[in-house]
Length: 321
Image (cartoon, rainbow, N blue to C red):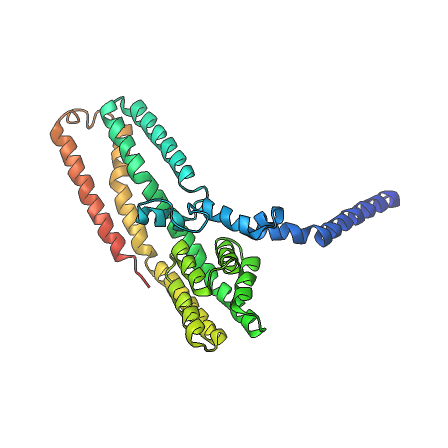
């Protein structure tokens, strides 16, 4: 082995010591504050503006609510969908995204098909159905994230109650410890209680904002305990066990239905894929019949029939638990 100059060894050890010292100083003085900002959006806003009331108003307005927490749009179902999707920016950002998607679809159809008759209906369909479909996807994803965190939140509340804290302080502990979406949602609950709302109203507002299936059990347990009394810690501990078992059952059903879902995807994609392959390999294969209206009608009927089959297969492999 070649000899190592001791001077270089000392330089390397000194550099390693300096790096470790800098890392230790960062972890000691800056990591805690940085972690608090990264936990959830509410804590990040509180790090810059300690006024909790203004943060509560800002979070409400980001979700499409008024400063008092009321719905802003007259169409209640759409307003509820926008609220539960968790989309920040409210209706303004949704309108901007929708108009951008409409312009993209219009340009794509006009470029590929060179037909204004096809471009206009495609754009109108995008403007009408695009926001609803996008919001439903966002809501489903957010509710799944909330459900995965919910049992942990209840465990934190149970431990806090057993330590002697009241329910609002236990809710604040969840807001401080867990990431979004559940951290910010419970933070809004804590702020609403602080600024005048009773516990049951704040919990029901939580359910309206999230809409997750397990939340009514939690809201009902808190409401009954507030009106009749009882050991809330023990009730919530049993509820946490039930919610965790339901979550495991959903995962098990999802695993068992994975084969059916994959079969449905392959059967749906196969005719479409074969159509494009034939178009690439032999562009004139459909050329002789493409100009007839009967061909377009047959393709439309086939597409509708395939869509019905996909819906049936989707219903067969999706279960509500």
